[in-house]
Length: 272
Image (tube, helix red, strand yellow):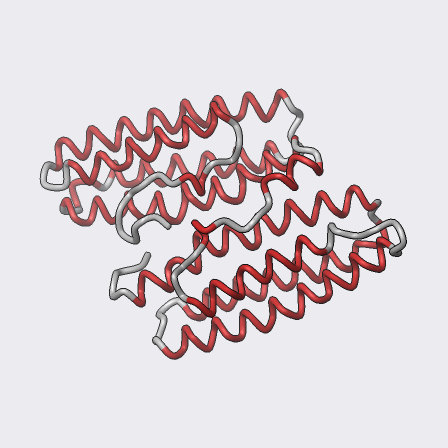
């Protein structure tokens, strides 16, 4: 896992497209320059301006790619790009009203809550759109980098991966749809148990973002329930691909982006 309050690229943010991954990494490098110049507002302004210009270039490249593959949600994705650029520009416009520490905090917030989320959710959706089931299956596995160094939470996360993969493992003698439905119901049940344990833990340490985190848990459970309801309307191939894509976003993004905040808070560090 990356450090709590620093701007640092991680292999966890790779989406599997060499050009786009390289551009994402460059965005992190440009954002981290603000940390380098933390006592020089003029240099920070120059770094933010460069970050904005490169962000626009990257988004234009990404949008051309999405157009080339006829991505279904291109319009919505373009809107998110515009919102991100506007947020960065608002930092630049209000630079005189902030000291250097406040500026760094703003850029850190952009990286942690806008850039990482955009990569792990929206850009992954593009990756899923163009990938086949086999390609998604290769991407979906437990990695030690997901560990939060909290034994109970890490064991729960690993079991969630194991149950999700079990849905895709069936032999010829089984009723495949029945097997999948039973396994997804098992996943849903265990995820609820895990979320209850995680929420109890957050209460025990007085985690300040407990309410927001609970809402995310509810949203994930709702998405799983929706997938279970739609199972009869989908072919096995469609369902397996959608399951892999959804779990990759629900579970991996939640661990990397949200659960990591719990550990940062536990260490006595400020969370955004």
